[in-house]
Length: 267
Image 1 (tube, rainbow, N blue to C red):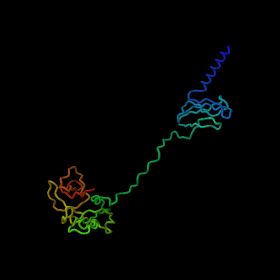
Image 2 (tube, rainbow, N blue to C red):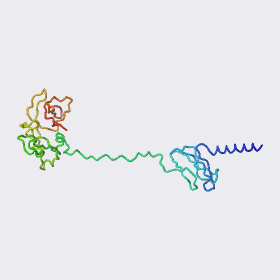
Image 3 (cartoon, one colour):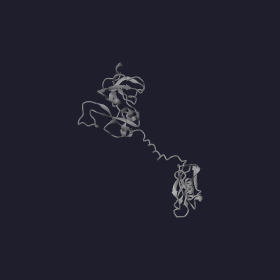
Image 4 (cartoon, one colour):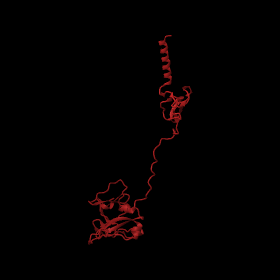
């Protein structure tokens, strides 16, 4: 065998050894940092929590390439790349819980505490009446009002809803507005005998003028009591037509055929 043949054969053997050592996706063994032993081959990368059943080279130090026996494998176990005490790269198992659900972030805030019903002062006229006896509607005489002082009193009477108050406050304290007679005793007055004293008021607080809707007969009494049902019609009938400035009155069931001042049912 010539020297040329001998050199060619040696190169082939060396190349075959390199192919075995540099397998796909694996870092090759290199001399140890301290000059003794080797840093064993290790898989270049692994899939988190799913290395697989086939063992992969785990790296680390060994006295020789033949002594490199450390491998990693498995499912539901995580490995992280680190460096061992000899300075060689190595795959080490971590404490990560692979079966735990993903972090969903901080827990949602607790539901808001129920603050209870709205304060009386925030309620409309009929909403205030619906909250009796806890809430009480109060009225002022717009012709001579302490709530809206105008520097004098007109020669008229015009009772209008002013505000809704807590019952204890409305009935036990002096305010510019006043409850209807008997309201604090739980006995709302009727409107029989009440007189119309203005375009939208009667001479008894809590009573308002009423006129007939189109196609209906005139009311027997000119004033009607505003109640919690005055603005509630649960029937499917359309409201009757009313003159400008008036709206159809209801009784909690359907329309009564009367019209009352439009601001009574204003929110």
